[in-house]
Image (tube, rainbow, N blue to C red; front, side):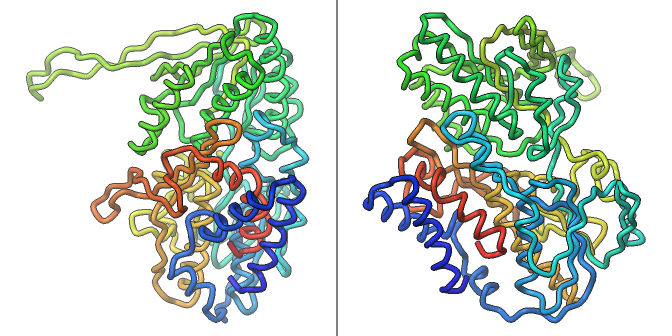
Length: 500
C-alpha cells in the first residue's frame, strides 16, 4: 500500500473516531492497534512485494459473478494490477456491498441499517462494467454464462464470488420466507415474524427486527417477568460462525445494563457439540458461558417454529452403540433422534445456509453445493476448470466464511488469476486465515484468529494464531474499538478499493 493511500485511510479512521467522541488516548491506542495489524491478519512480506510489483500487461475477458465485498474487492485489485483490464461484474443487488459484519451491532447495540447499507454503484471500480442481472446458467466448457434477463456473456476467465443464501424455507413454519440474500430487500420477511419475538440478524431488516424484539424482551424482564431467550445454530456451514454467540452475549450484556439479567434465562441450541472448532477459543467461550450463567444444549437442530404459540422445535440427536457386526467385528453406531419443543419469548434464528442453487447445482458446483476450489494447494482455483476461481462464502473451504477471510482470499485470487493469464502456474497460497471478532459484551471483543493447522499433512482444522499485540483468546476493550470504529472504514475504503 502506498504511503499516500495509508495516510488517506488514517484520515478517514481519525474522522470516524472524532465523530464517535473517543478520547485522544483511546484514539491513539486504536490507531496504534490498527497500524500494527493493517486491518486484520497483518501484511506479510509476500503481500508487501505484491503491492510493490509492476502491473501486468496480460489480456483477457474477466467475468466476476457477484458484486459483494469479495467480488468488488477483487475487481478493484485487478484494476490496480492490470494495465488494460477488461472486467465485467454481474450483480443483481443494488446494495450488495453492505457492511455485513455490522448486523450484530444493529441487533444488539446502537447501530441501525443506515450505518451499514452501501450502494453497489458507489463501489464499482473505474473501467469495470457492471451488469445488474443474475447469472442463472453456467457453461464452463464453452466459457459462457446466461443471465436471468436472457443475456449471454462469454469470458476467458471467471471468478465466482456470489455469496450464499439464507435457507429459511427449510424450517417448518417459515417455508413462506424461502431463500433470502443478506443484503436483499427483505422487509416482508422481517414483517412475517410479527410480534412473536423471533427474528434473525442474518439479513438487514431482520437485524432491525431483532433490535425491536430485544427491547421488548428486556422491558418484560425489567417488569419482573421470567423470560426465555433461545439462540440457534444450524446443521449447515454458515457465514460468520461466531454471530449466533455474539447476539447471545450482547443480549446478556443489555440485560445486565438494564438490571434485569436475573429474570432471563438464555440458552444456546447448536447442532454441533462444541462452542468453537479451535480448542483454545472453545475453552475460552465455555468459561465465559459459565461466568455469565448462559446455558447450552448441544446436538439440537432447529426444524420448526410456531410463531403464534412461540415454540421452537429441535431435532435432538445423539449416537448410541447398536448391534454387533460379526463381519466388521465392531458395534454398529446408531443415531437416535427426539423432537424437543422449547417455548421462547425471544428467539434468534441462525438459518441453514447454502450456495445459490443456480451455482451449487451447476457444472461449476459440487455434490455439496459449494464451488470446489483447490484449497489443499491454497490456490483457490477451480478443481476442474483452470480458468475459474472462487472465493468468499460460496467457495468450498474447510474454514473461511468471514470478511476477514475474504480479505486474504481476494489477494490470492488476483495474483493467481494474473499468473494464469500470463501462462504461468498459480503459486500464491491462501493459508486458511479466518478471523472472528467475537463480541463478548458491550465494550469487549475476543479477536479469534486462526488458520489451517497443518495443510502439508492434510490437516485443515483450525489453529489459533494472533497477528495483533494482545491475546486472541481473551476479551479486551481495544478489540471492541477495533470492531466498532476501525474495521468498517477500513473495509469500505481499504478492501473495496483493492488496498487493504
